Image 1: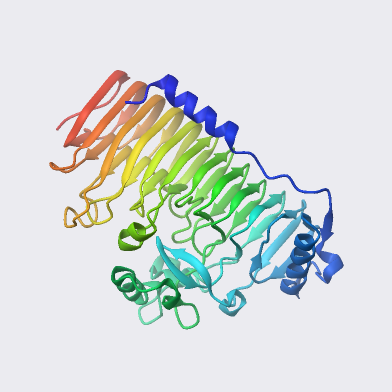
Image 2: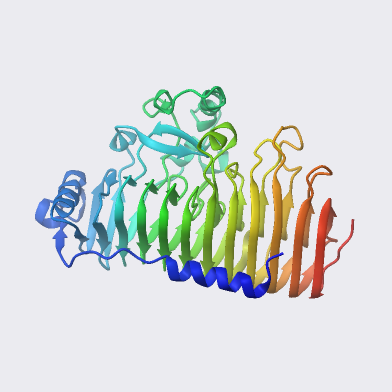
Length: 440
């Protein structure tokens, strides 16, 4: 088990190592390239021209002044900081054609060519989205959300949905079909993520607000040195995860607020056969001084975690609300596989959860039907106060693959509605813990 001192040292090292990119003091106002902030004029070409000019000049700030600027996909390039001034809104098109041609992306942990994320970068260095403005995806029950297949969000029997396409993509991944053959854009219904950086280095997202996302909000994939700071996510749509670092190394998520339609922060690393093919873990992730207010897991590992997750630290966070389910939620099984190791939580204040503070149940979903038993262990929880939840702990490993190493120290659990559920857990330590109702 990682000691508290070692956990603090490792977290501090990540904080020191992850630094924001620095941009030349040059500005490229989008209005000088034809953008009009009237909410009606299509500014896609103007934004692209400003990004190209900034990149060609060696980098700087593409500035968006106060106003509402209608646009399609924005593709960032190396050296570009897309800066939204106070009062600026980027209002993204509801027309799927505005997100063509298809680009390389990951949909639910599987590589494919699909609709472009609204803000996208591939293979770039030193990029940013900053400022005090708003990125509005304009998704609702008749645009994007209805593709989820959930009647709560506008889908009705007979309408197209993403699950119509998923079995084919999954089979292609299982067969090992080349990614270039997996094209799911025109005529298909995989919703794009809002902001995605793919194989990028030195990424900064700071200060902005995201609303009405089509699917996941922030999705760094296979990136290094990512800083997400003082960002607000207020998007309670289907699968509207707040921030999903996937197969990334050295990530800091700091000072952010999440009202999400799914997991607030979900660390991922690919799914099943495709996750084993890419085989890149997420590692060295620091979450600090954030608040998680709504929906499923406050901090989730998985369920797309086939490539593995290690060295995740969360500290000084505020968690809880009437619509929030879990505190720490580890989702895997013998179909997904992967590992979660060295997961350390410290100094968390939790008001209320509708389910468990910590859930890790290998039998969730497919049960024990696969050939890839997961490896989960070295989980430390320290200095945590939970006022109200259904349980403190629901942890169930497999007999042949138990959860190894779970320590709670200096924790207080208040009003817990039910006994804890524990099965196939080796090395459980409760050190100065009050209020748990441990059984099993």
